[in-house]
Image 1 (cartoon, rainbow, N blue to C red):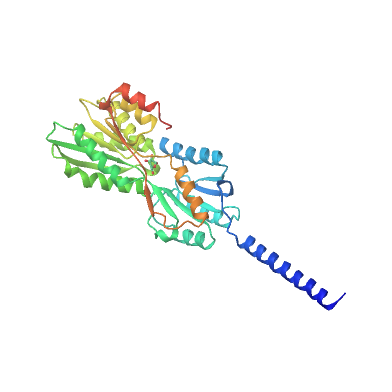
Image 2: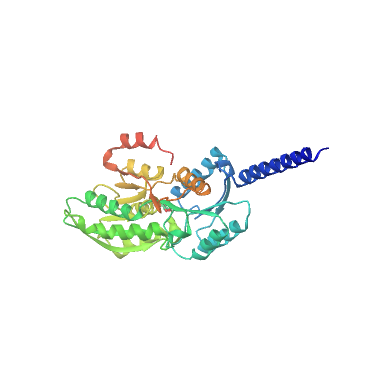
Length: 337
Ligand code: AHR
């Protein structure tokens, strides 16, 4: 075999090797484009404290099934320490590439957020605001609870029209939860805006874990403490407002027109039932159907999309008994929760 022929073969082999090398490196360096089916999500839920929470959990489970996402669901029983444990479990789990947190409290998550980031996990905060640097998670998708407080005060003002002064009782959710903290703050901020009735919050107490049984007991105690003095009740969610209604009725008082007026938050099917029977005067919506937005954001994060919003407030409405039973029933028939 002549020298030049050998040389040609050697050069050809070298060129092939280089091309193969390039294609491998380009193939291996070609960035993977993730799809929903590539996502394994560790979802740390608060618990199952309300109808709203049930709808939120269903949103994540049903959407995961529909999109082919692997969902590892964790019920924190409304305990922050359980959430920290779950976070560490998902950080250690090499199959999990996304962690979603619905926070029981507002603080105490920094260490696990830093560890998740170091482990290359995408973290999305859903529903509840937390006090942590936004660089520690991809984005937060959830309600403007302060605004819900403002809407609740405006609704209370409307329901108490005709009274020069009025005394209000506030039945709060869990005191650690941003939903309760911000609704309380928003309500207090907006009360002075009512030009028709001077409203005063007589008393306020939180029901641990959003427990309606404790909410009812709190209302019973307030009815004894302030006999004949309560004009309105603001419940931080439907269960608290309904617990207040049940306590008032058990005490022989009227809930609704001509009696004590009630305002709730969530607008779940149970809340609608009490709007329709007129005992609940107004229900401020809090949207639980957040999964599609959260999963989309997680996929964007996996695919390296940057410049995302730090917070995406949920779209929400409000409903009033004054809309009438038929109209409210027609709306309720179209709703998923
Ligand atoms: O974070 C949203 C709140 O959590 C809902 O208003 C309440 O029902 C749930 O417990």
